[in-house]
Length: 475
Image 1 (cartoon, rainbow, N blue to C red):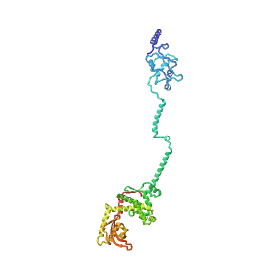
Image 2: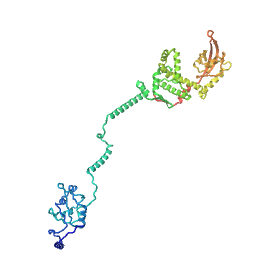
Image 3: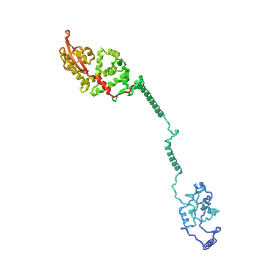
Image 4: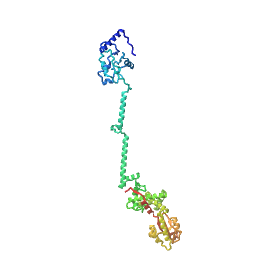
């Protein structure tokens, strides 16, 4: 509540008179001293000094008025005299506080009525016309706010710069970057050289040392038989080491690889070896290293020593003993083993046909008065026996297999054995023509003849080759 003002009766009467005079005249005599609630200021108000020249700069830095909210309320309610002392700093420019907007029209009428440092300021308008109160927002450090905006913009720009980075933004390339580039370049260069060399081997028949090395390093195919690969290295090896053997038809499979072109002969030979190995696998058989070495020792013994054997093999085949063992002897033994297995396999048509033919020839030979030599010339499949009437000459003990020797030496002269003898070549019909005993040694020998009915394994293998799926890559 506003405090009461003590007035003497004389002052009361004078005040009443002044009020009545102002009402009757229609205006207020401001020149006369009138007792009204006033604000006593020590100096000219800063807000009045800025009334005519308000600028954005002055608004951004308002003068600060130190006044409590309680005293503002008292002025608004009672419109009584309120004493307020405006404190300002001695050196700094006074600033307004919590001013969002202010009313210029409310300030201008008051400006004319202040003429000195200490005057009575009439309260002609509520205080709210001077200051519009607004809610204060928490103060934010301008530097922090600017940093936030800067980081947000930078983040947006970086997402775009990742796609369109300038050369200056790229990281510096170190030693390992250039090292990897050199390695990749060298790898690509080697791959290109290999592609050129492989093309030369397949299409231009290159046979140089580099081509041989490439063929042995990479698993390149020369052909495929029923999906199984024949390596290019095996083909090139056979081409290089079997030239003389192919010309002389001494490569171990003569008769199956007859071709005027040595290149095609090598391919056919490798295909045939692959088919023979496939058939042996069906029977669960193979040529072991022990069997191979044993047969090589037998060849060396026939030539009376390794040196002599090496010389003769070089002359006949144009290769050394080790190459002879792997390139000639192994395929020959594989074919002989398959032939013996086919002869014993009664399920094969080729075997049954040969056996039926042998039974017919045996029946003809057992007839009384039959000419065995003429039958041999007609039916035997032994090339030597066709010209000689099946004559085998004199056979002494130890000159043939024990099974055949036992049968031959048990027969009397001019007798045909009444059963068919079977071995790995085919079916034999034999006759003992004469027997002799050497008086000096006492050894007995027999002169025998035979009719051979072969199981044509060569034809069987050719039929297998014709029915196999063969893909040749060498042209």
